[in-house]
Image (tube, rainbow, N blue to C red; front, side, top):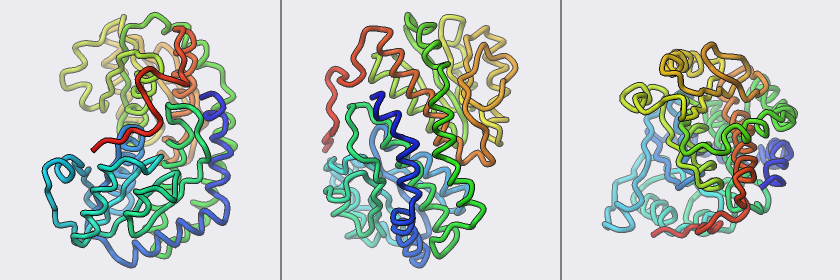
Length: 345
């Protein structure tokens, strides 16, 4: 898991080279030409969190309505929704889960434009889709996904911005900002705060993660990593949802990890941190600047746009999940009961 985490700056650089950006640009141009009226994402686990990031990008940057598919409606109940005029995007590291391929197959048969985003371009998911994108993360050693997650995020960002451009080509300003990601990722991974924080949380019995907008997928993915590597119950909430009831369970014994960036989503989270502070919750923020009311911060480099934060904010949280698992005497490379490919029907 440590090796996978460390490879992410190189993964960003690889996906940003001419061969891969060119391939994604071709897909984006084809989607733009087909002019879908809405978008449906389908994924499981970590890839579903990447899909959620894609959903925010799609609604904010493209102005298209987004939905999340319910695979069981198709694979268990035999539903055949009419996907005419819909872009259906399946996101999966392995591309091997039959229920995801089943959704794309039905979508293609009923008039949808289907796209697979996967780390295995020869997978059943890629074969089921009309179009496919290889996230080019390379072999992932650990069961817990890390580098494939951030590769999916960047691939979806390149796709959505390419569709927005119309011809798949990113504006020069966008490209210049993205070219800084490998170095920014190196800086985020070099920080040692996560290792120290793991000792502080070694005996925690539960945790809460929270964020809004582009940070919400990060909060959900962080919770999953904590659960699958340390077997630590971790509840994830949108910052808005946290205030609608779940806030009542927070107290000094329940650590809260709050993703607080510098954009609109991050600014809205500052009020959430204030409310948590009123309940004397143990709050640690993830972001580029300190937040009043928080007990600490996992630092990440500042970026020019909140869209890019999701690719960096998760890095110290991955390191925290790894360090916490080791501090609790667990093996994060082989979580009990889990396999790399989960084949749900």
